Image (cartoon, rainbow, N blue to C red; front, side):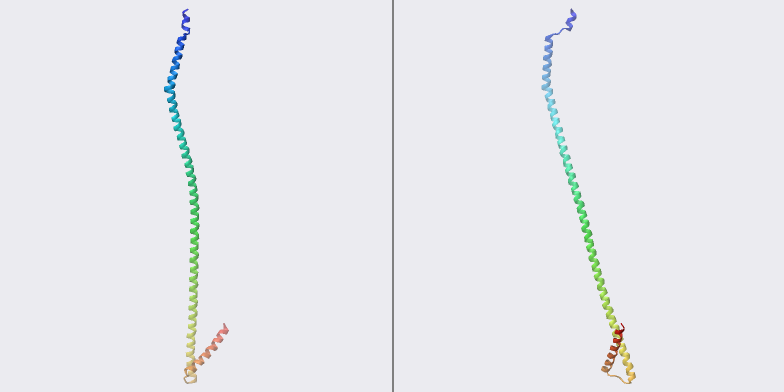
Length: 171
């Protein structure tokens, strides 16, 4: 019957083993499980904090991107407005320069016309004097005597009036 002793169950030994197991469990729980749990909780807290910071940074980056996009749109609008204002100013400046040039050209034309009228009148006066001189000499030779200046002037004025009237009717 010796073979049965090997397979037999010793209750005291089982109880001691169970008690050892319970003590080991309590020791492990107190010295290992709680510190590991605390360490895991701290790590989880740190990871959560990093996720929150990353989410906050992402939100700030999106806000910055939206602000940047808005600024770019405003900058484009401002650039368009500046270009439009510059074009309008250039057109206004061009219009003023053209108006000034036209006014100056008109002044030059008026002055040239006035000078032409004066030159024509001067030429007519010169021709009248020349005709008067020639007429006086011709009349003096024809009459054989010298005319008085008043008589001479009256004859010339009459002659010129007749020439002027015939000249005006031919125009």
